[in-house]
View 1 (cartoon, one colour):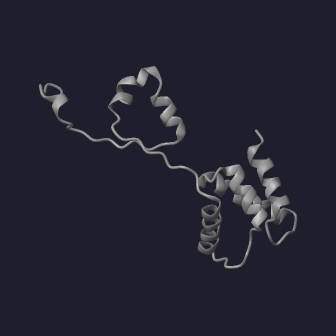
View 2 (cartoon, helix red, strand yellow):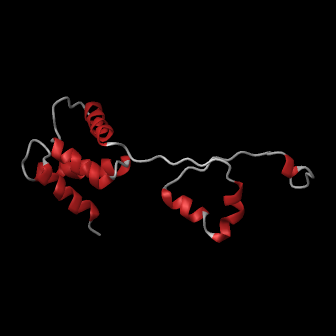
View 3 (cartoon, helix red, strand yellow):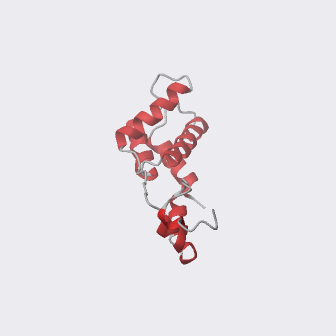
Length: 124
């Protein structure tokens, strides 16, 4: 393959790069210019909408065996706003919210417990 004279006329290899937003920034660096020029298709997943975030949390709760309401609408709004709808951030905030609700002896995650979770997750 390295000595092939028609290398520019065909594509002998396909590669799929999947990563966090930092991967895109790193590829844009000057040292990766050759790689950046060869990427033919780029796609970025955006964050979920508010309703999608609520459904996402509800789906995970159902998978865990809970069918009752465990997050108030205000808590879901705050989790969505802070996480920007990004699934990993939603997961982290939801888990911390559940821990905060347990620590304060609450049976439902409300806005105040979600705020405790936000402070815990976003503080360095």
